Length: 453
Ligand SMILES: Cc1ncc(COP(=O)(O)O)c(C=O)c1O
Ligand SMILES: Nc1c(O)cccc1C(=O)C[C@H](N)C(=O)O
Image (cartoon, rainbow, N blue to C red; front, side, top):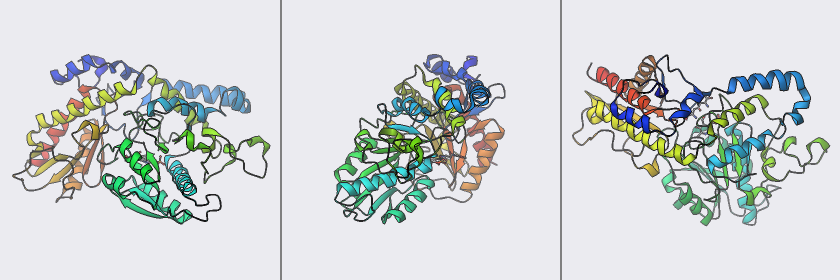
């Protein structure tokens, strides 16, 4: 086991061989990881690790650009154009051409802009009147992914109230069939935050378009983890955060993608002055800027934004397809090792069941294991029946939360989501196969100790 692989050293030969062949292994050194402390960090699907070059760059921004140049930095240090410049840096990672992504605000705020923008465009296309808000062209419904990360659902409901639409929660698998003549917009997560399931962006986008609606993709759990293909598959809008697989740091600004053909018709519900065609004219009337700039609202959060820009340098020379290949290999390997160390996925009355699909085309970059405390089931084959019941069996959620606490004590950092889900995120730029092996081994030890107690 090489030092570069970090904790997990001394792990299985299989892990060592996989690490030795890993084309992305050299990237690990670009991150500050707690290798000496023995921590295996599998929570990059919530907060990515710190790229080593960020602190020095932030110090420079604060001391030099803010401290010395002060107001001049808006032009001389490129602060003013940072939202679009950084958007173009993210673009290839999500399959977008230049000029369609703006960075800023939170994902929640961008969901609001995109959903209202999508409803307005759909209505205009079907004979409604977008700017006055009157006339819907019969497009009165917003479909929302029934298992969505909560913020999207909350925001969609507010956007619906404001536009006179209604929201209907629909399981993603049924959305294509449910989209119809009343559909204005569809809001859907490409990867489910709880189960790690990857949804079919190309086919659902095509279905929504056939129904005459517009689709907003939340790519928080796919940006930087897998090829998204926004342009290629005709996505209308996309929003995503940058603090997960893009490692931008806590609360780093989100991004908004508006497909080029829709930009001139994007009627933002938050027309702040920085999205004006001539912001420094400071005129009374709002005239929207062209292009990605139209997605801005107010003054960009420069410190977070420039930390993100520096963090994105770890992607230099890295292709998203290599990242995807390693992500699938890591998640396959983790599942395989859990099965090896915990045969049948169970110990006594305690059972782990993967909610993350086995099929690669349906898997994001995390593994979610539902922890059930139940009677032994004759039909159970352990870890292999995603899509089954997710009932919180007696003690399930409590035991899962307790187990995640114990994992943290043993240096394995994943997280817990209700009901009883242990989440393990795999960030290919810095996670080694040794990490995956060590996490599986410690998890199995803890389940065995707890289940047979
Ligand atoms: C799918 C998804 N959407 C949105 C968010 C959060 O949005 P915000 O960045 O506004 O907190 C998260 C995670 O926090 C998420 O997982
Ligand atoms: N954004 C977060 C935060 O500010 C605090 C704690 C966690 C988060 C997260 O990102 C949660 C994450 N989206 C999830 O998938 O559960």
